[in-house]
Amino acid sequence: MTGVYGGKRVKKYDIQVEVTGALDEANAFVGVARDAVQDVETRVALSNTQLTLYSVMAYLAGAELNQSRVEEQTAALEKMIDALDKTLPKLTKFVLPQGGPTATALHVARVTVRDAERRLVLYLDSKEVSAPEDATCIQYLNRLSDALFMLARKYSKEEQIASNK
Image 1 (cartoon, helix red, strand yellow):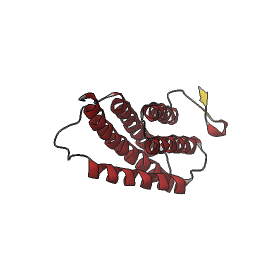
Image 2 (image 1 turned 90 degrees about the horizontal axis):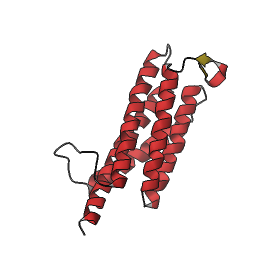
Image 3 (image 1 turned 135 degrees about the vertical axis):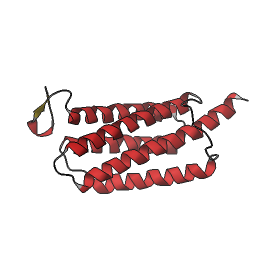
Image 4 (image 1 turned 135 degrees about the horizontal axis):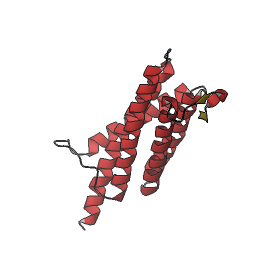
């Protein structure tokens, strides 16, 4: 058994504990990716991501969600995705999670966020009552994994160019 927000005791494998653990794991891998990235703008964006993931974790534990912050961060991710999409070639095949240390770290962060998103949906579906904040959290994780994918593509391209010099 373990304690959750509000003093409630649940089993270690409770879906609430599972989703919080998955988000914590994703947050750690975002940190690994952040430390692998060299440009300041992306490092700041990934640090903001880590703070937003903590907000989502706190919400799932029972705290209030700063919904406007999560919505602002989602919009920032969408802006990043759109900007990166303009600089990258169109996809014509599946992308392997490789391309260099930074790209690979971003891919690992991406897949852990996708896992956390699946667990979040499962947890939220199990709740008796849904709240508008639930959809905000799902949308944020979805956009985050897409942004990490785009960043991985960007760094894969850059690292392959650097290794061919």
